[in-house]
Image (cartoon, rainbow, N blue to C red; front, side, top):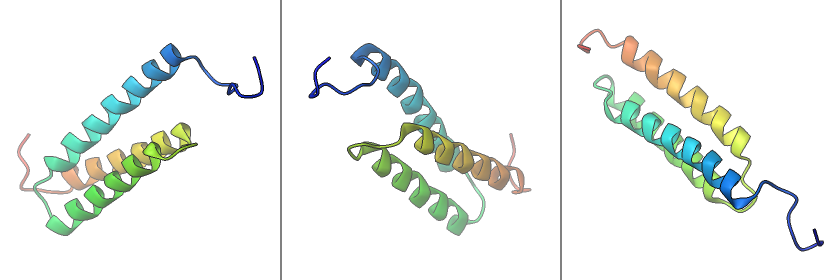
Length: 89
């Protein structure tokens, strides 16, 4: 390995990790889109999701931190869904 090569996972490993993260982002998007409660709560969650996605696109993005932020967003979206008594699942 030369100095110009990064000391990170190979392309296949990065793609597999990216696929998992992409699937989780899609799940979060669907969860937020399905909220029928307070529109302000939904907007705030959408803004957070957009910020997470944007930060993950930046060079040197910390994928672990992004995944943790995504976990918190999904937990908050789930709480919002459960706290909406008008929701029928």
